[in-house]
Length: 430
Image 1 (cartoon, helix red, strand yellow):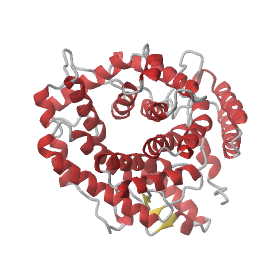
Image 2: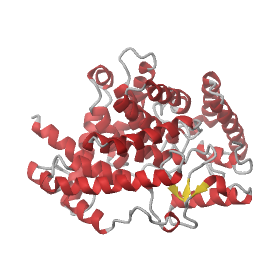
Image 3: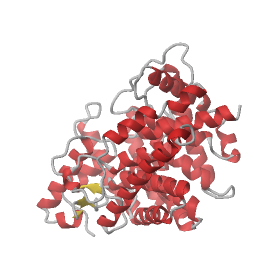
Image 4: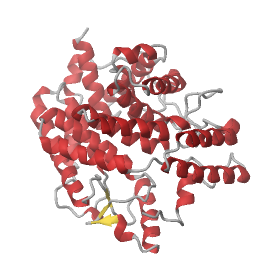
């Protein structure tokens, strides 16, 4: 299918962190980077790994001393002195405020009009993950939490059926509120101008991104949540839906926004874990080689970060750590690609984990990523022993605990539930 020619160059520029109004880059430099981004997309589409590496390296050279500097400067939140992890007594009720909030604000219902909702599948993904994880610490509400997770999962399965392509779709809301909807609105307007809106929207859902890659975000997170529902319930409908989402992800081209590719790698690794079908592992590895590893700095003062200004931001950094960790966890010990994945993890963790000594500059994606890292098999974990993961995670853990004591919601449902479950298993093992 032909890409939307009018919008593609701008999308590629933005994906590679090259917004037109980037003040730190001269106009000539921005133009060079836009040209590289277009060539990079073509190399990714043709799966020319050598050319992808060459172009990514060329972009890094053009960025010069701006490589690895985020588009928004890091801002650190102070961790209270003498902060402590949650006690066993606190753990048992720590998810209660989330249960009440989720039940009160429930918006998902099979049959709703997607054009009238200002909510995203990623919201349900974090609710499912959080509720399933919290069951291990909140036994009194275990069935209540499972019901919430299953209701949310059933909605995702229904929306996937509505999309008819395998993707877990994005609501085709016009003029919706929030950055994701603003981006989607620009995309749909362009599709409308080019007479392609019927290719983008089906039954009120956005089902095509014309190789922009944006649909990989929600499809990846929601697909992983369905995998976790299958793990908890053994209900094949969730497994089948996750497989359909992964099959859609396989067909999608790698894009120049490294973190978009990471969502699909995350999903493909998890579906490989529950199916053993090597096509998902092979696709995850290929997307990693073409769409994550080339953008990472391997030398210089900011080595380990991703070079472009957008993906140098902490949330996206740890999103890619999570995807790499999920992949490393399922790769055979003798896999030829494993050393490169582990080295990328080592560089990424070493680049950002020490920054937690200054305070909290990212919470949710860091918690989720570092839990995955801490649960890696020994043959991988031993190669990451000097990356300050323990120290970074402990800082995040006590920060979140003190936030809870202050009657705040320190993390989203998914990260909070996973942190609680990890803390309980750690205490049980002490």
